[in-house]
Image (cartoon, rainbow over all chains, first blue to last red; front, side):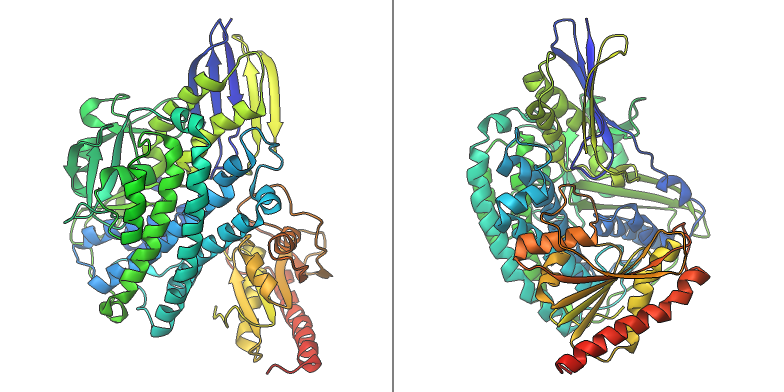
Length: 471
Length: 161
């Protein structure tokens, strides 16, 4: 007899989804799927609007990744305008991009993932959350709240709002950095650095206690995709070339953003609103790749900053294929972000007041690519002779990871799911794989639902055999 | 919205979505207060929602005043109450938190039972659109007046001007 287990929805992620696990006649897992049950409309309703509205409009896709969407959108618009953004504006954009990464990674690590590690995979789900951490490890909760606050604070200082600022505009930024803003940002960095180093210390020790999970959770060969600096083999979040490496970290493709469709295609499955991007040369689904913090550290030679490079050297001794190492990669990127913000603030050009270029539409098409906290983010726009949008294609970070998330769920389910009983530990481990990717479904499909969990086990005829509800 | 820093005695937070009709009541009142208030010891912020990271700022202030809109059968009616700190913060995490959870988080993380006061007005609509309904708009000056009187009282109690 075959059975089907459904986790609906998955909790402590950004958005709404469910997981189904198919059991065969012997009770073993035969298949597993991560379904995204939201719908996205941004690519449609931007059509007919002026291209220069896109950064403000696309920023509304998500409250967490606002900055990433605005930057990718602005880059696509600037390609249509055929203008070069001034150096100072690019540096200022990089600062808010690093700050955005800090606040997002702090949310993912401290608020969403740390309960699994500090309270245990088998712990009571009603306590396994940020508020449980407040009770058991208040210093960790304070660090998480503070680090996220610093990231948001830097965004607010420069862009005047924590969420959905209108400071990133086509051609640059709306206003230069003042000396007061400069001082305020620099003042926040030592505390951020202290928190990250402290967190790296305890988390590396804790991760060693989860050897089994690291070796099982999403530990499979895949390719990795990320931006790298145009000129050096260095981590790049803002703008660069796209690099694809194989599971041995050997480079298999290096291409410009304008050529992304020569390398990446998107497949569609009837059971999910999330598309399935894949490496075109290898086809679907063999062309599976991962993006995000783990991918970014896997494609580069250096982070570009000294302390993060020391951590990267240690990181190289860990399993570069294990999805659980996304969490550690996130912390290393936080360290790099703080160091990079300081480097940018130390540049004398940062206070230059020329921060915006002006032009109208000069090209019919533009592509912008940034590294959002969760991975590579592509905005591709087409316009008519009047600069009105005729089409848009967004390939969002979480979408790139869709095949890998499904693979991770299947692998973990095969190890932990026992068809005869439903346990919290098993349910949480299956969810934890997804959580390690830190998917942002509000970005990838654009809807927000209250989070809760519904887990069902069904027989071959669809009959409900067992059920667990959370939230 | 201008910010007057995060290190004063009284923190005023007007929160809500200005693109959702009367939900913009809090930010609108905060904006007017920011223009009218002369007290340097008052911090005014306009936010879209309450988040856990605000606990740190709440803990640093003697008093925090929240301004919001709520559902109700009598649009324009003003409610004012002191938030009771729960024994423990809510076990449920969402993108935003309630005033009670904010009080609980402040106590759990920073050991301070905060003086948190909520002024809210009953709304007509939270549907998509800018601008307040006439009922909500009619409550704006009354809420400002109440907050000003409260702050005047704090000012007379001890001058930080």
